[in-house]
Amino acid sequence: MLKDHRYTRSDGDPILFTDFCNNVESYAPKSGSNTSAFRRGYVDNDDVEGIVFVGLGAGNINEKYNEDIKRAVQAGKPVLIVTNCLEGAADSGIYGVGSAPLLAGAQPAGDMTAESINQKLMYALGRVKAKGVPTNKIPESVDRIIRRPYAGEITFSDRTV
Image 1: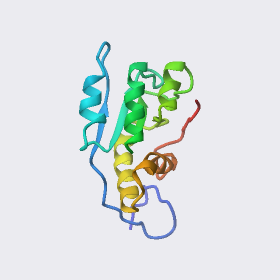
Image 2: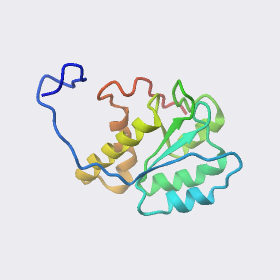
Image 3: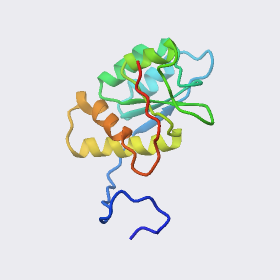
């Protein structure tokens, strides 16, 4: 039984899912950094199954990362973009530098915090793996789970390209 102050999804009993995929990593590039650390440590690393990419401002990412983002998504690794701002959302469609990663296959995490999206990505990857979703369908299956609000954790979910 959930406590009264907790969010509920329905009037029924909660469904417990514990098979989270904890092979999720966050990447926050620093000004002037090259892409080799991202490529080797995240894209080409078989132990990493999902990536939270911390973009600048509204979720902007330097274009030099676009090819690696595309490779990651094609390999079945969802790439979710969060903002480094204290308030607001990853609205990647505002500028070209934010739209290009979306064209490469990344998805904005809306107004979810980096911490929240990390947990939700672990949950989503665990769910799609438990269902046996084929590798090439994992990013889109994860995206559907990410966009669904379970407890008010996401209210803004822009997907503009």
